[in-house]
Image (cartoon, rainbow, N blue to C red; front, side):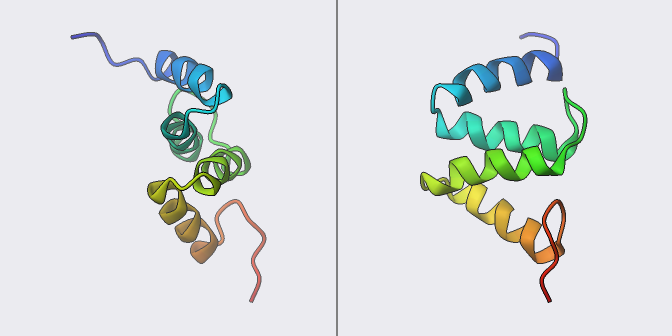
Length: 78
């Protein structure tokens, strides 16, 4: 195996996400949401989750639902 390296993971996820890989877009959203390998940035997390969700990634759709449900990184509307 290899040593766990969040920075390296983000680098590869971004490379694939920029080329349209839906799973990489979802994973990059997760990294931004958790602050793994990058500074925590909920707006960027939402942006990457939305890219994946718009292409049918059910995990990204679920994560976006939770983000909107809890109002994390999005405007509250109630």
